[in-house]
Length: 562
Ligand code: SF4
Image 1 (cartoon, rainbow, N blue to C red):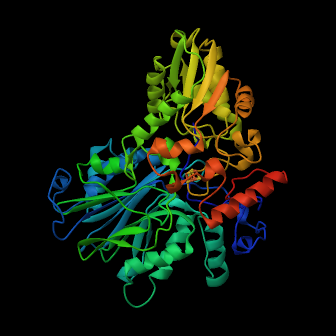
Image 2 (cartoon, rainbow, N blue to C red):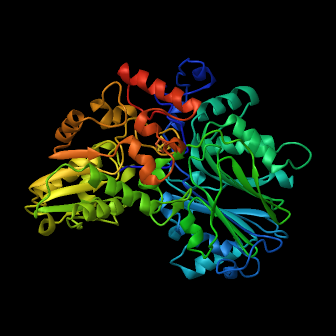
Image 3 (cartoon, rainbow, N blue to C red):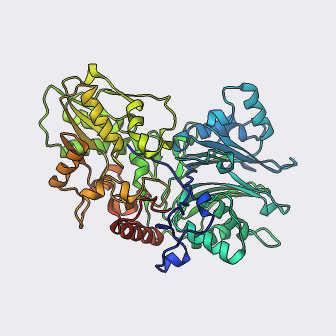
């Protein structure tokens, strides 16, 4: 299991070990600047984005989704769309809408909380009032994930930037993380006398957008994105709306994070995950290709390319853990990818199975893999671990209490586990704190005879710089066991030592080469930075090299992009 966050903040200037700046890109370390500690707490956010537009004319056949719209008001659909993206972020939610003729042509509502809490979905009067106030023919929405602190509405998205000129008055939301955040920030601070208040890359993007929209007339939106694309390094999916009623949805040229879109009648919809569209009734759901943007201008929709896609780098972790199991990403079903991963684990299995064997998924993301693995092995897949769904956001707890979190988050069932040889299937192991605790609990409280761990993912050997915060290099479980020249398949010896460290009878992982076939995506089109240490962007590689140097030098562990 992963304590995952879709982080778009890259602050962490606490010790200067991993900071990046323009100087850093030339190989010089950045020291902490006075006063930065205050802003240095890593703030992690923005994981699900959505957009809706009631076009000037029908662009496709009407259907169930477009028939949900009345009075050209799409805002009413946004909360339910965001609910379908809630898996991507539970800390805050919000929307911006546009309505011509309203004094606030562009208006934003956002707050800390789940989508249901933010939009008052259990209070009909409050909910109706919000929807009425923000009614509009165009809306963008966001769900934010965060792991620590900063539970305040200032970090919630969309970010609206007010201005007297309509094309400079805009709002946007973001999913991803800029690997060169510090470089961009320092460049702005040094050259243009900017001031930052949040220390997030979202704030950087806001200033970058504002800068590119300067001038006496509206800039073509494609030009704006093309310019951003030339300076950004990393993952950045954006939804944007301005006070002229122009909208765009853009996906970065490597396509790290997914984006789907569709049109039905006059309704255009786009979302981080296809499930948010299909659940609304959209049928012909397409993928926004890397480097493309969907633009709505003068009520008309068009798809344009703002940057060349020289290679793809889809985050494999979206399929393994992060995306909702009902979504299809870049043409490949998340559920089927997880099921194939389980089947592959079964093909690799070398343990003898007998009547005492059971397969237990770690709830909930490992269930598809566990069921498929169990089916292939001919043993039952049972719920031996019950997850307490009401425990809240345990990821915000400090390291020292993580083991305790696992203890209270999962209850091992003795009636199921007692005397059994348990094959525990998980989607990933990052720090191992939770896995160690689970294995111990399954034996102690559950009474299992043996615990064998099967992981539907390769070992995590490096941090991510593109929006999924897996921890620091020093805190990762696997790297300490890997040989210097690790080829993507852990050796028997290495697995044995890892199993011993976890306190389990045996441990198996997928290999890096299994990812392409399991996901049914060409392996060359995947980002595998965290399982190979080879990141697909220049700044990612640079951060990785720096993290390695710091780890070798015994530097204090901090988030690698901090
Ligand atoms: S480094 Fe790993 S988690 Fe990050 S984008 Fe690449 S595959 Fe995804």
